[in-house]
Image 1 (tube, one colour):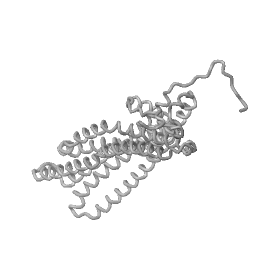
Image 2: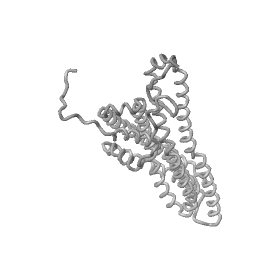
Image 3: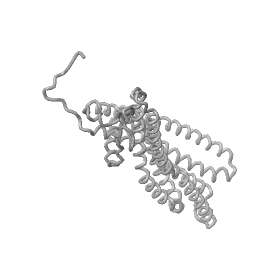
Image 4: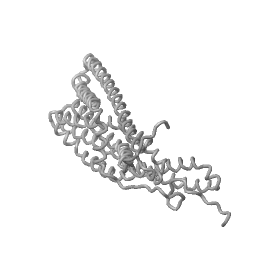
Length: 361
């Protein structure tokens, strides 16, 4: 026993492992408050955000008009064999789709700028908060976890803003625009097509509610892993001196497995794309059958109108699927935002009234 080597505590631990000072707080904060607080960081980007929103609107209008022209080409040119008219409408559609591609490029470009500036502001405020925290805070919190909040979590926010938010804007506008276009084209087919929409909404709501805790845990487990790695590397001499290499490997494996498990639960349970695709395909089939029946029954419908409606329905359901899929990255980003705000909300250490400035250090 006298010769037994003892491993000093040098960082974050795990249950039944060394250095068990830092525990994961899996309590979910108020999501609405977090979102409102985060939106304040977008305040300086209002003009750019509005311009991006306008570009999304233009893209949607072009898509609606282009889809309608596709349907008219079936009734007016393809069925009648008018190749000259079909050629002209193809030229117009080509020009419209090129214009849509240009507006899409610029809306993505502006959103990247918004994301970079917003994440820069968050990173700045977080770093300033760290400079004002008392020393006891750093004694009870893993430096690796704090680094993870400053880098991984902020980068996650940046990626979500630059990619997912653009999809969110265009998705919402597309859904509204296509819905209006469908109602104007055929109210009857619109009622038929919307029968499956409540099922997709309820499914999304259920999955988002169930998977949010897993995304919170995933981000925090990642912070624990980063903290463990950073502090073990910085204390490698002590680990070697006390011969604790094997114990450190075992502890790392446990932490790594916990992160892997959290990530699998978060990603696997939120993968609702195949289910939505099955529902959408069923919807298209129902619309096709009903459209054919209405035409044969003598209703004021044409093949081109049914074709147009199917395109509208596809453009209506596609953004719904995209919105459901980007909830994964949005939830992960919200988990990162909460972790960042947790540090910002920590009580700051105030200077003594008798403190004197020190210069020439």
